[in-house]
Image (tube, rainbow, N blue to C red; front, top):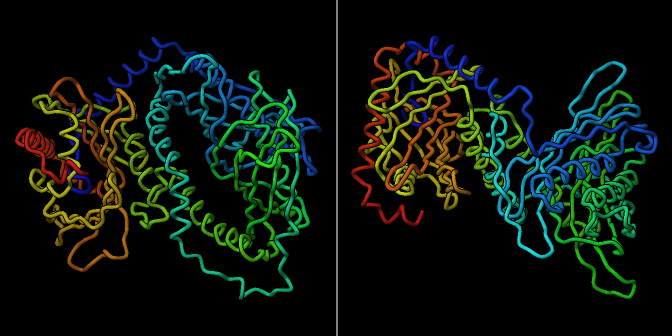
Length: 589
């Protein structure tokens, strides 16, 4: 029942229970109605006409961004019942271009509402009406803020019904946490990330001066560019930004570039009808097959004004495709001394951060390696992946009850190549206290015999820590196992949310594999705690077994249910014995 090793399942009666579970699920689905549709869902379909396309006859990304923003705003306003404005947009990766004559289908729905803001999920596909083929274009996550003139907005909460909605609702809280610290995270990483300068190794005669790519353009905000409150549409600003960024990229490559990604950005303030928006773009750095273009937007009201308001900044990644849709090699850039060199090196740092974020945050769980290298440049995203993976496992709706002994329940879930376990019980202890006690992995050996010893390797921050765990010899193995585990904990974001302790394996250069131990790995495990009443907590433990562990499971069926029960009851006794005696170190975690 530990985070990484001795977990297994009882398979008795699982087939019959699974059939019964599916029958109940099917009848429940019929009761809910086959035509269920999320009440906040908004769909838009647009036929791509010549006026929407660029020089290659493909849909302009700026036009697509306007449609995305409009659809998402309508979804947000459907839930809020009042006007909403775009606050931020997460990373967008464009997987497919859209040609003239094809149809763009955009679907948006509110994933979760907070106090006055909400996360809206957007999915974009394209459709060829002649061949009936469809392609995934991109997914996006936008944050909107509800706004009323005369009263403060308090949004009603979303009630998720489907497994997908429950997953998005749960993970939205973790994404919001990542957005709130995003600016500081990037600033710290850029300050601490050592980027090797390679300018001196490049042939100066082949370098393109960055100043040759600089673009400045002004736009007058007119009524068609704004909503009913007179605020400029966020999608319109994004379209103007894409336009100047494309011009800057074209000046470097002397070709028609393709926008592949837009990095997460925030709108720092609104602009209104009558504002003049100054858009500035420049190529910050060019890599072998891609380039980063920085765009800045400032606003002013009257020509005589000397002060300009910073609306937002964004970084866009472009490539140039050849006739076979393969990226071409790009010319190098020569930055200007001073700010130009700073932007050049920051672009290199952002590229690494961007690749880490895309790999860790966007990668499907089945595609993630078991142990991901940990370093300061990806710690925020590994923590996010750690917690969100556990929350996604919790949200699964096809758990099957395998056994129940004295109100301790064991559930199993078979999915793809993974076998997952879920233990659940009620404990007469305060929820926050249970959370604090089990957060301290140093005390895990007191109740879990699968933890022989635990050492704190690094306290990353107040919510994340890395531990080295040694477990006893398992089964017929000749050596004990050891694990390097990242433990991430979260308090509830809102009423009804659980306390969470998530664990997964990471690799550290300071703790390589040694001959004395067999290195073990855990993909996803941890605890969730729900407050069921005063001094009453529902404690749930989850573990997603790795493929290498399944052999142990299938050859050790007999007696494993009893082992589960014994370990979980030991956990309960540990909580009861320490419910009024929290260690001082836990209070400051």
